Length: 136
Image (tube, rainbow, N blue to C red; front, side, top):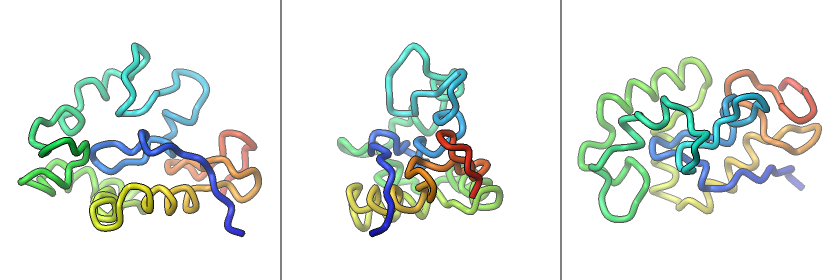
């Protein structure tokens, strides 16, 4: 059986970032609540994020792939940084959500980012499990 973690789909940001594997979300001190969660604890950079606050997404979709400008320059630049630093593509994430659905994407994410020691999420930024301390 493949181990899984339990990252909820609300933690997938409009840009395709999985906030559930972000260092800011996983840490204990000054913990971020995630892009889609409304809270007074939300980080300032999330409150002013152009991608999160974009009005170009169509219908009730919360993801950038519904925009007529997708993938626009800012998202491509962000994606390039993430691919270079963390070997993760937000555009690939968005395309997977669009093509296979959010439930299937979450199945993949909850298998991909699981700590082999304790089953909790591992951090995309440093490969660390913030629960047991294992570094992958």
